[in-house]
Length: 314
Image 1: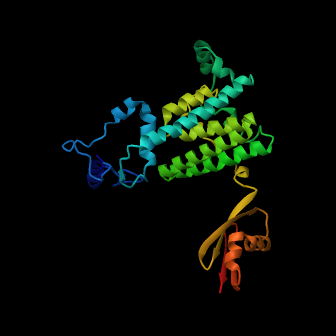
Image 2: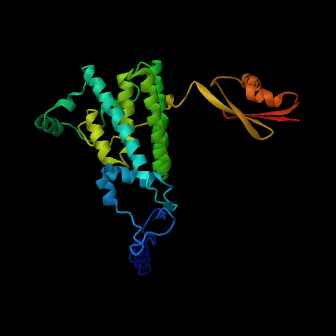
Image 3: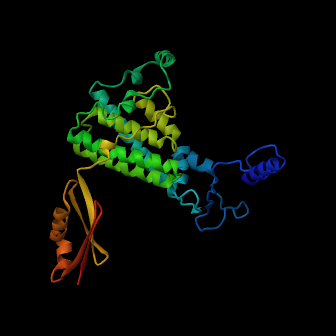
């Protein structure tokens, strides 16, 4: 169909019926999915995969769609992995579970949103009166309700870089790395919950609503269910993409890689405001680095701000 669309458009352009010979602003050839042994799917070989069978096994369309976007960059061919869909299903389950745990926590604190407990008729009435294009307050007022406690800062500093990464990756059609970023931040949120619980309701509400919104392009059915569970009346697909607050992209520490004669030997964590001299001194005192520097003369020290220290020794 794409080839025919270009052919017909160019034909009309030659006739002078249209001004632009190209029907598309951007043209991307997507890769194909092959069998697990690398051969092409074929009816004669009987090696095809029926998506309805996968859905019927209980994984659902969202897990299948997410796997296809996660398995490889969009423009590369990929081999079908029978364990791929179960893997994305587990990821979506983790997102589902942490949202449900948060909702249960709110219920236990008697702070559950009225939208969750409205009857169907009451919800319809409220929906008719509400501007459905308006994002929920928790996504409009990023960070405004937080007291910037250590627990709330940790949550916000986890979710905002993920919002930034997924937004950029979606615009660049890097779907696999966008999903990887969501998996990473989900793991981080579980770690923060295990450490501090749902210590700040507003931070967690924003973080989980943002995570659900990020998931929505890949798993729309799961995302819409969770969006309503979090107390929203609209669909997650209606103008609810979260915004990045740059103040939460800055961390107190930074990771510095240490090279010796061009080879990576260690990494160190230092305060973000550390001077170059302090960072170099800290690098020399690192146990691994010290062992490589022992008995050697440092000929040159190269510092790449916020990233790297390289020692040239002999």
